[in-house]
Length: 150
Image 1 (spheres, rainbow, N blue to C red):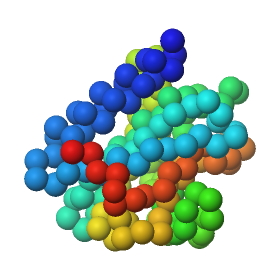
Image 2 (cartoon, one colour):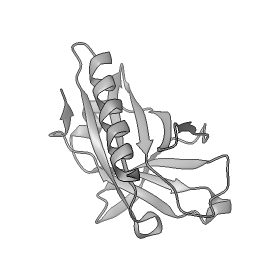
Image 3 (cartoon, one colour):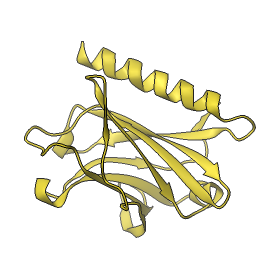
C-alpha cells in the first residue's frame, strides 16, 4: 500500500512539473535507492533557469533511525552512478526538506550550471544523508538527455 501511495505522489509531482513549463520541457531523472535506503524510490525534475538548473526532488523514504527534521545533501557528480567521479556541483546552501503527506519528502535545489551542459552527458545526481546520520549515499541517478518529461 505504501508503494502505491508513493508512486501516485511521484506521478502527480512529475505531471505538475510538466504543466508548469511552457516551451522548455523539463527532464526527469529517476533516482535509484542505494543499499543504505533499499526499497525506496525517488526522482528529480530538472528545469532550465537561464544559465542555472532548478532541481525538484521527491524521495519516498529514508533509513530508519534518521534524525528529524530530515536534512539531506545533494551533489551533481562527474561520472555515473556505476562509475562515480568527483563532485562537480554541491547544492547544500539549504539542506531542509518538506514532508509530503505521509508518503515522502520533497525539496528543491539550484545548480550553477546550464541544463544543456548537464544533459551533454557524464553527470549523476547523488542524495546523501547528513553527517550525523552517517553521511551515506541514499539515492543516485544518471542524468540523460532522453529522460524528457513532456
